[in-house]
Image (cartoon, rainbow over all chains, first blue to last red; front, side, top):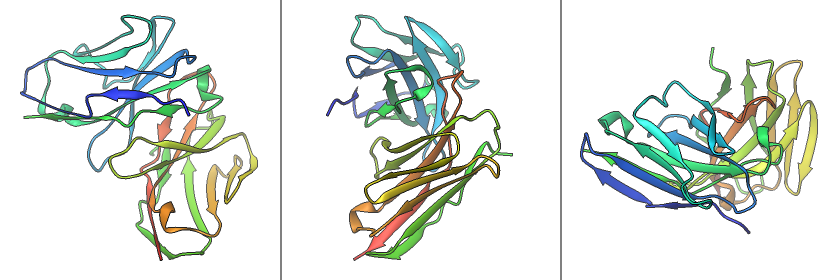
Length: 115
Length: 111
């Protein structure tokens, strides 16, 4: 069964450093998303991406965050200057259609620890 | 008011029991609803997807949506220890790709 692949599975970084989280969505999917889950809290939407541009972003997704689809297969989330409160599980997801008509497939996540 | 609310549990049942998991939501714009299962330190896995009110059955799982009362349910028949996980209910609308998650209900099925 097709999977969404995320790397690395765990990343530790120092506060103020830049991190790039990588995702390979399912190949025929056109809509891509990043969500995060702070330990003990609910999964939160960060951003949706379609046709090489951001479709929607949440208030969490401020100027420190950016997304990119650099080569037609990878989908990346960059945090420019990490803060302690950025520590969370970051999930990438993809879907065939807008609005999730067929559901979303999530990756296994990247655990980001900012120290 | 939170857009999607779930009782976080934990809910503990014996193997073979029928499990009922419930959510309420407040956003009238939601048109589709999903149930995801999440094992510890894993990504959410799609279980059921429903559009508008009604029932949907898939094997041991039945999802119900009642838009008039803004109530979403997931029933698990003949529960198994492998069903032990956190169950997330989600709502979304067709005009956005954003999903709104509930807190999740932790289920433990004891052998």
